[in-house]
Length: 67
Image (cartoon, rainbow, N blue to C red; front, side, top):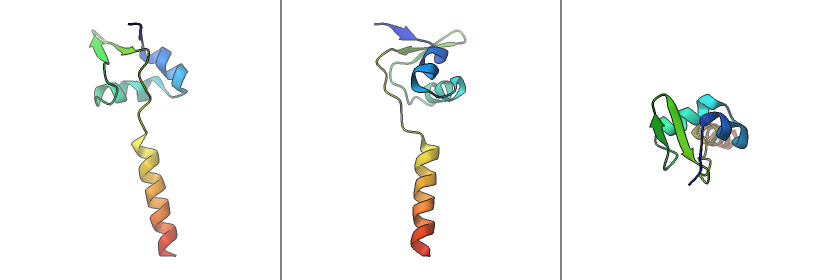
């Protein structure tokens, strides 16, 4: 199985390397392993949903409903 680094996956998913590393650290990317200081992530890993965007959408919806 081919594995990618956070830099390669960040480019593929169009997000920052730091965000990919956070997903790995939180266990949100199955199969990601830390080798030394480098995360190795399966090439076929799917991008997890960003909880920051989901929360913002819910807050906006609730605010509009109150008006």
